[in-house]
Every structure is written in C-alpha cells, then in structure tokens.
Length: 429
Image (cartoon, rainbow, N blue to C red; front, side, top):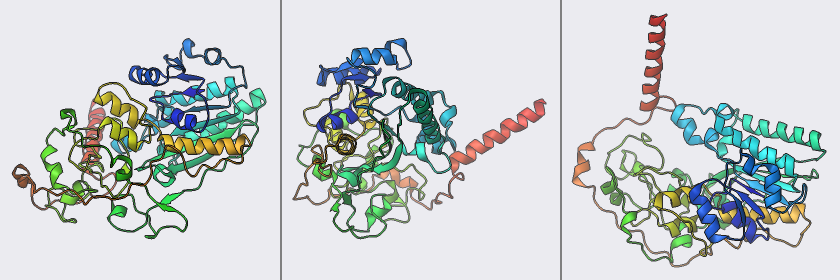
C-alpha cells in the first residue's frame, strides 16, 4: 500500500527490490498522470486521503486486500510543517499546530486499519530536529495506541539517512521510520560510500570531517557518474533567466555565490553567507549533486556546469529513477514531482533490507542497489569560467558577513514589524 505516492520514487525502489504496488493514493493531478502513464496496472486512488473515497476500507477493496494481508505500507506525508526552509524563513515552523501535519494522522489511520506486516514512513530531517521532535513523539504515541487497540506489536525504528552515503549521486537527507507488526527491530543499512578528501567539498557541505576515506567504503558517486553520458541539452526552456542569470557563467563548477565574496577568489559582490545556500549553486563533475529542489526560484540551483537548468532526464538520473520512466507535465510540474521524490536507489536499499530482516530472505544484499549508477571514468576538466558581466560591477565593494542566526536582514525586518505591531496594540489599548 502506497500513500502520498507522488511521482513514485519510493515505489520504484520497492519495485526494484521485488515488491508490487497493489494500491496507491495520490491526489496531485500531474503525479497521477505520471503514475498512470508509467504503471497502468497500478490501482491508483486519485482522491484526498481524508475523503471517504480514500478511506482505509476503500484502499483495501481497491487493492484486493484484507486486513493484515499487505506486506508493507509506505509513504512520505507532505513535509511542510517540519521543513528546514520553513524554519529558517519564519524562525520556527508551526509543526504539529499546522493543519498540514494532519497528513501524519492519516498515514497512521491507514496503518491501524490495514495492519500490514511492516511499514516505512519518510519525511524531512526537520521531523527529528533536536528539542523539536514532537512529530516523532506523536508517531510513537500513535503506534503505541494502535498496538493497544488492535493487538499488534508494531516497532518503531528511526534514522536520518544521507542518500549520498548509500550510492545515490545526490546529497539529500531524509528521516525514515521503519517498523514490523510482530515487534522485530530494524537495523538500518550502514553507509557504503564516503567523501575521500577534505577540501572545498567540505565548505560546500559534501566533504567528511575526517578528511580521509573510511576503510572499506567507496568514494561518493558524482554528478558525472549520473549524467555524464547525456548529450548537452540546448532546449530554450532550460535557459536561466532573471536578474542573476548572466552572473552564473562567472562561477566555477562546484561553487555558489560565495565564490564572489571577500573570502573566495571571485569578485566581492556579496557578503559572506548573506544569501541562501543554493543561490547560483552549480554542479561539479567531480562531486555529487546537492539536493534537487521541488520549487526553485530563478536563481536557485543546482545548475548544470554548462550554465543552464538541469533537464528532466538529468533530474531523474540524479534521483536514480530508471531511464524507462517518464515524469509528465511542464518543466515546473516535472521538477516539483522529482524534487519531492525519494531517491529510488535509496528506497531500493531499504526495501531489500526489509525483505532480508522482516521477511527472512537472508540471501539478499542491499549494498548494490540496481538503480544506483555505475562509476563513469574519464571525467573531463572543469568548464571555463567567464569574467563577471559589467552590469554587476556596481556591486563590488566591502560587504558585511552574516552576523548569525536571527540577526540577518530578514530577522531584523520581522523583529521591527513585531515591535511596531506591539506598540500599535499598546496605543490602541
């Protein structure tokens, strides 16, 4: 049973590991079209999960399942209440007070009513932020209640996984919760890949703190491994537009706007860490990709090293979707579907471990997911860097570095607005 299926990243991984999607619940029109075009045999309920049309009984009926028949329930409830972007934009997120967190409750309702042998729930790292783990507490209490009500013994095992450490050419973090109906504990797979050196990769968030490869682990797979065989795409829709488009060619591979600060080798156009991380972020052939965003702005990367947006096929490769799969819709819809997905190779690895640990298939190995790309030799040199366009030279000068969390321009503006509102309330009183 698949909930919040989206474009099918989790499902494709479980499919590669030998599972069959018997029924999927997804209401996004573009995602439903993608699922139906690629997997016409799947039973898809294209309704709101809170509606009667997607009740637990209807899910079982459409999937031709009885209570307790399903091997596993999978899904990633929409994550906005727990997202780090929401946290940084507003200083905090509403989290469980946000009505959108009701999606967690719907997932747990289906778990209670269908009683699968196992379950996997995926979400953003913010679900398990230190001292902000009310989402995990809610899930644990709900599972405890399910066990009391229906006599199951569901376990709950939680891990924050970095996809790049498991054979995915993209540095993407997600929380996974896995449990078994009979109380078995799940041991998450250990990393198979690591960063081999300490250098600029660390500054850009991909290196490892030790500076040397961990014994027995392979180096991270890279963007070149994933997309290096694809012909350059000159589709006009991939051209970068907006105020900063002509600055992108002046940034080297593997860098972002920080290159043009007084702490790097470019031209001092910006203050250190005064912009969001993915501003003018460009892929390097020798590094994994950074997280693919679902709804990027015009200057939000990662961009291709050829100074353009990534093509749909490139986005899918970085998410380890099979080449036979096609995500439908316009470019914005395609990126949203792919950016919201779980890397299929990571899902495959977890699915193989679930089969091995919960279903007794001891001969399976999960360390070589079939959907992960092979290492691609012959990495070309970095693309040439263009000089800064004249129109940006007016920005050259001394720029203050970011003063710290809660002290930046946006925080100061919000604080001023709150103080003004408070003074107005006092005056009105």
